[in-house]
Image 1 (cartoon, rainbow, N blue to C red):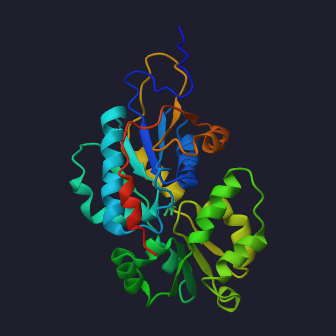
Image 2 (tube, helix red, strand yellow; image 1 turned 90 degrees about the vertical axis):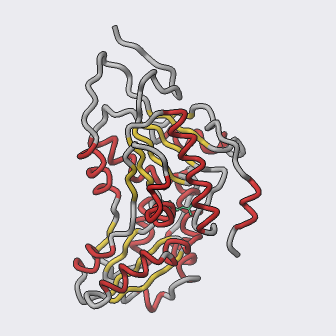
Length: 290
Ligand code: DGL
């Protein structure tokens, strides 16, 4: 007999793969997981209570993310966690062992080496959040590969908001994307760019508009698909006892914009479950960087 579970509820003993981001960015990784292995239960955790991550201080962000992940592990018993956020991944990567769990954790970081090689001798823009472009691991990798290609690091916070707006169904024009970029990299320099690293999981949602802003770029590096492949290589296919409905569930960390986000995620196949049983340490918000 087939069992139909309520949308928004994880079936008992589901052990989902968790996809974690501040907002809609992780959906660019989730869509590859769905495409590559549609049978897997997915739990999307959007830390909307702390969105956006890209302007937060490292220490505050780290303790926030560890707090949310502990609550996710406790309440959902996942098989794997994919930190589908470059800002979070680059903040945590050196301290991931602090997360007291056996659950495999996968990260998404900008593919600096691969892109340097792909445009060999040309100019690469690493387009990411201001936090990501400041991280020492990112700076180190860029230095290591700057003999192969010229790098320009561009922190573009406004693009994160534009991506959220676009996914929410509002019109976002190429002009708006160009205007946002004008604040951080002039068009004369954009015209020289051969390759762009989409170093924030929100940015693939703006790919068409970004192509207008970087007219010469032929290489567009998005680590999303490769990440999904790596995850699935290490997570065995689940043998399902019955042909259950596959669960795609969304947990938010705050109810403040739940009604706006719910349809956005529903359009991507994720049904909103209860908010994560997690008491946010809101005073940390005051630690935002200026
Ligand atoms: N999606 C996140 C990333 O890949 C950043 C979005 C945010 O600033 O919250 O970096």
